[in-house]
Length: 272
Ligand SMILES: NC(=O)c1ccc[n+]([C@@H]2O[C@H](COP(=O)([O-])OP(=O)(O)OC[C@H]3O[C@@H](n4cnc5c(N)ncnc54)[C@H](OP(=O)(O)O)[C@@H]3O)[C@@H](O)[C@H]2O)c1
Image (cartoon, rainbow, N blue to C red):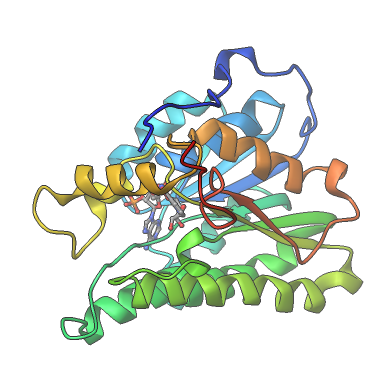
């Protein structure tokens, strides 16, 4: 296979100077690293007051320094309803409303049919599906009319591969949940959409349970070589999509999926 990259990611330093979120409050779950951190930084660059939720207090502090002054950090586990309630009570103590939420925190647990166990299945679904649903339920009273919610799916929810029973099914469920929730809040003036990434340049593979020891790098390389663009996506490219869907530029878009996968789920790279 030709290992050439045709499309270089844009230089994140050459962002535009728009202030689409000036005076707005934007919440990001999993905002302490990876895709969530990049989106939180982008919201802040465009003028938002940012709230981030994740479990590790140390990483939250590091992220807060990277996002900027005024960042609200909430340490909570969003895989249980109790954790979500505690998190949102803390959020409500800091801000009186939320204009945009990027519900991004997710867990990837890879196990094949014979090896799958209940704990892995439940952790994946509790974080990715139950957590996303009950976050939306808890957030709704805080969401301003005209507000927007963006969920984080995965191409694993569209293109099947061995070992992704729990993760892929959870992300497919989340994509459908997006449409259902969009229907439930359309009359409240709230839009709900989902980004569907694949092969992004984050460390998630090192936190993915079920990969063989040392398998994270091999896993990333396998996805990269399956991707027609032959490169990983940059977190800033995903952040661009999240901010677009969260902004008034996407004012007529709800219940939609925006795929960012270098072509992975759409076509095969021509061999010549
Ligand atoms: N990277 C990719 O290639 C890729 C591709 C497709 C989809 N995605 C999706 O993109 C999202 C972000 O992925 P990423 O690559 O940025 O992952 P990451 O680097 O591992 O970051 C995950 C973030 O979520 C937080 N988090 C995880 N479980 C949580 C929980 N139970 N409660 C609260 N916070 C939690 C983590 O912080 P703590 O650990 O401190 O809680 C961290 O801030 C996920 O939904 C993932 O499935 C990623």
